[in-house]
Image (cartoon, rainbow, N blue to C red):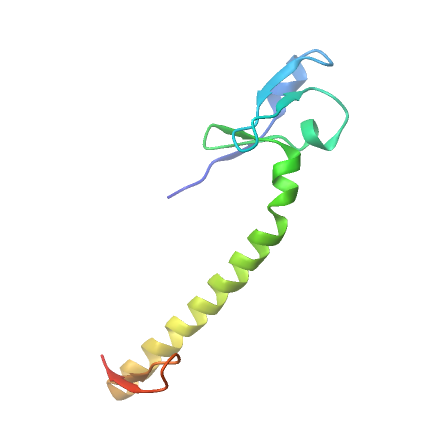
Length: 99
């Protein structure tokens, strides 16, 4: 699945104080102003997301990235164990399981 992210370049055609749209996450109205709410507005797959919502997603995204990296590392370890020995050690139970 490819996610399309566009910076709001079309805002240059909107007059100052003009309505840009509504955030799809918090439903706040986004106007063209010099604040992070409007300047940080982006489109993700056609959905408008305001700067406040983007800022609030920083920590969950970092956590998800860490968990994803750990999962990739564990998957590679499991595949290596299966390839070498035909079995793998389940990290949750500590038991050897057949592939």
